[in-house]
Length: 217
Image (cartoon, rainbow, N blue to C red; front, side):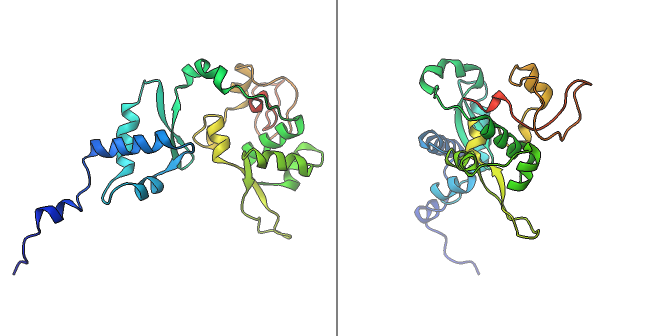
């Protein structure tokens, strides 16, 4: 025996909006947000039954080739100016903030070797890492504390943040350029880098995961 038919008005309260409307909602949220937004955060803001992941896929395709792109930053999403148009924003975005060589090397080591402990950073650099260097990178929100190592003393590790990925236009740390790419782009000098952990690009290049001008604004 079937129950009474559901009132059309009551039924509509639980129906998800059309996908086109969901796209508009996602677009509005990302446009107004200063920080990247996760799918879970989108779902919490949108009406019951919405599929923000599907809306993101449609929206990303819609913005393909436009002056603004929908990009993934770690586990979150954000709207960003197309990379080839970045020069148009230079006057508005230039910020004078240079890192010390020690900070550059430390940041590079964390980016390429994460999760990494302070002792491991010092071993790669060959010198002690000052508290001020680590504090500066954490204040910039470019590195953060990771999980503790299950070794004697249980030392903390350091990893890069989503803010770091967003600043350099990376989806994840796996997208960091290699030594050959950095030098071809003129972003890496010919000095040996701290922490030789990769194969050399040629007999004269010592592949490492260290300092480059990539980390200077």
